Image (cartoon, rainbow, N blue to C red; front, side, top):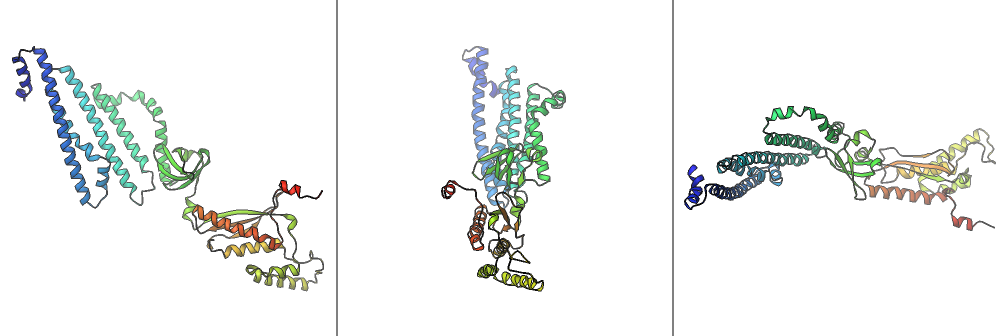
Length: 417
């Protein structure tokens, strides 16, 4: 090795060059030769290692090794051989330049730490991608935990580099940073909060990837696409992306629609406001006319018979409809809504179905429909709900009822002078 090291040097001295210049030219020539050798070795090792990994990945049943190749783990591992080669030969090449030799050794060791971090990142990303393919873990915030390990690795790596540069033992260097711990905590405050929030979100199963959440404070209303250490990404229904701090999920209130999506139906809760002045008792002729409505024919027949028997037994004077027991058009309409919902093919019959009358308001009497559509997809849900209310609004005149609405400009024009 010593002969190779001084071969060019001896040649230059024999050529009549000064000893100092010969040393520099000798070092430069050997350095160029090492760089060329390193590039060749790196290329060959990288090709062989990637090919070997690819062949192994094709033959194996697991998807993990495929992900290793995708995340460039073999490529990063291949750099280890050239690095060891440089670490071995640089001290020999720079043996006559002690100052530069120390600097070069530190640089090589720092690069070794960085290379280790690259390999660790490739492996951790592979683990993350693999765990996301597992059915039980694909909706968990795996990225948050991987980021925690990566941050820890980077902190250790940075401290290792600083220890190498300052020529301090790693343990002594770490213990010497005790006074700076408050600054470190301040710098990584959001990271620490996000880590704690990620653990609580995961343990309490508050949010999963794919959940539909509504977070009014941040203007989010859509599906969760990513949960990381610091942020949660929500793709809104208008295709915009809202980013929410992870710790906000445990510090603020938000709505998760998962309960609805995993249930048997999606709730319909909407009211028709009926004009109070159109509510009236039904005469015998009114009841006979409404018996033509098939959904309530049997109800009107049995109900009218019960009412007539009661009024006869108690000698009620029915010349005035107010006396005794009577049917009202609003009550019959409420029964019609109930029958209509129970016969609607898109309504889940195993969940609550109710038509209820709410407290009268200045805008009329609210007749609220409370039911659940079997189809929970947004587009279909809106279609089902619109179909129900289209029908009910059109059905109101058959019961002598009207929808309340505020007067418009045309209403005033039509008023008699």
